[in-house]
Image 1 (cartoon, rainbow, N blue to C red):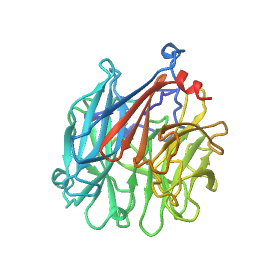
Image 2 (image 1 turned 60 degrees about the horizontal axis):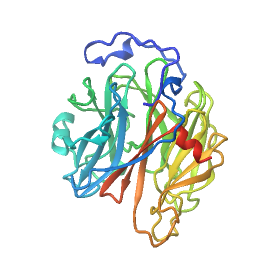
Image 3 (image 1 turned 30 degrees about the vertical axis):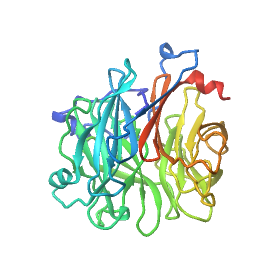
Image 4 (image 1 turned 90 degrees about the vertical axis):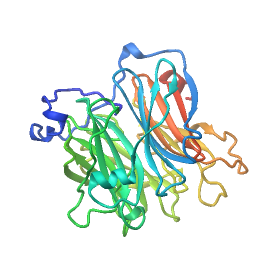
Length: 382
């Protein structure tokens, strides 16, 4: 999503751009994010927007990508509550000139998903948007046919017109054995051969993280295990160069309650032994990203499960050693970390747009907060 190819050549796509895998070779190097110097500003920018309130009783799991015209395409799920049968996937566009979000549009409900996937769909869940360098936009999302989230599937829709229209959904085949219990939350990394890695997690009989490597046709080419089955879900990936990738991982257990970290030196194919950091995690999502000076940043709830309201703050921390140690430099919500503060802030997402960073997160499941800031503002926190 927030990446540029160093050696960028993509063969001409066939109709709908869905047979790229026939022309690409496997290159295990990820592409690196670099900000064009012409976009850099020295004046700090920090802006806050709210949107979505009242569209549905509850909403969650915001995701976004940058469009060629500089706007953002956002997506999320909304309905009467998480896992409810009336939940739909919505999209909206942030106009970069008017600095406002468009009226949300419902693009998929469980009945439409059932028709497209030719199977019963009980509920919809987390979406993840990804814009491929070829110009194809993909929307991954979770479905459940029976049981709970532990029996879920990942599906994908494609758009060739920047999210104005979407083609029929396709279910990803991650494993020949049942093909269930694969979920998504965080951003995608792109490999130099045009394939891409979707960070996913497993929740049935053990909880662990891995990367599934795909082509534009939605074919799963490989899978790379990040952690084993021990309460480690929703990996967020940071890319430092064409080989070095770090995963910051949510702790879903009750024993450690710390954000976990792992590192790969071969573009996410093999991983070291993952370790907990000193960052508290009350079983809540984190999002980590790399700035234009190759420093690491992370958004998370700075709390643990012993607190009555463990998600009532949202912290921004910086790391100078690729995520091994962290320092909180700003609380985006509840700056005093008051226990009486009743808000719930979660599921952060970051989209990088040159020198600009867009942060989105859920505000008490009632609306979304969108923060827009630049590299110069980050520098003021150090």
